[in-house]
Amino acid sequence: MLIETCKRSRIKNINWDVEIPFGKYYTDHMLFCEYRNDLWKEPQIKPFGNFLFFPNTLVFHYGQAIFEGMKAFKDIKNNIFLFRPLEHLKRFNLSAKRLEMPVIPTKMFLEGLINLLKLDKNWIFPKYGYSLYIRPFMIATDGPITAKPSLNYLFFIFCTYVNNYYSRPLKVKIERKYSRSANGGIGFIKAAGNYAASFFPTKKAQLEGFDQILWTDSAKNSILEESGTMNVFFYIKNSLITAPADEKILNGITRRSIIEFSKKNNINVIEKYFTRDELKYYLKKKEVVEIFGTGTAVVINHFETINLNNKNYLLPILKKEERISYFLKKNLLDIQYNLNKDPYNWRFEI
Ligand SMILES: Cc1ncc(COP(=O)(O)O)c(C=O)c1O
Image (cartoon, rainbow, N blue to C red; front, side, top):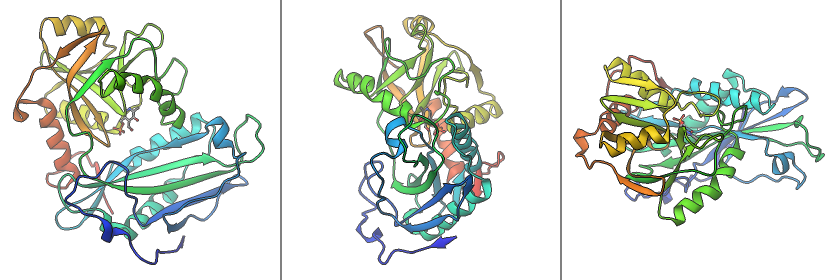
């Protein structure tokens, strides 16, 4: 692997005590690798910086672009852990196949990522709540602007330092017009275009005073799907209800971890199609105890208000310790920060 280190680290500019907007600061280095003539070339690490592309580069026109989002944590002894990196790679390669892009070999991914993290290890602050968000992504780099899969690609990994993201409770509107995915579509992968398509409806909801949209199915706008960059759970009658991971849902690594952890801890989990009407029935009977979203960036974030058919329903105001979302978040974070045993083998020490 070719490694060129930066002359001077930018880490001195960071004030670790101030809350930093997500994605504002990037670490000193990034990894990239070219795919040409059906082969991945030697990966390279360079100082974080810009790249030059011609305007006809395919990614700008047909959106052949995918990404992942994962995290690294430090425990108080400065040991570094990734959370389920091979699951993220598996999903990345699922995205690659669906968009007719080359897959990333495990060795290339892990070696590259470990080298990058070792170089930029000081950017992972050894404190609960702090982590490093890792962004692998791949783009089509061919020139001729015909609408066909590219022959050449670039794979990158860069990292951004984060402390708590989205920490306040959310006001969420159940969407009745727009959808993020469709049968046979690409809702189950992290394709860049899925996010671009979500911006307009989300902006509309934000102008109406909501933080996020809860998406519904494209056929009838009835089945509750996911929200922003989170899978969604409803806690009703001592059960957690969440949408099944079909082709319209991004099967979150956090989602799967919460389901596995809950099942092991005798919390009933139901993966099923759950509709707006069913939710309305339980909201009216005041049987919805909590609604929360799960995702790598937020871990878990609970909803404060849900807007259904233009009516705002205020969810029960509970103390932190009374929330199942808090219990689940704390247990997951304790595993991520090496504060508790990891019977699931989710931690990956580097
Ligand atoms: C659309 C969408 N749903 C759900 C998630 C949560 O997935 P994960 O828990 O793997 O971060 C994400 C984030 O990656 C997302 O972008």
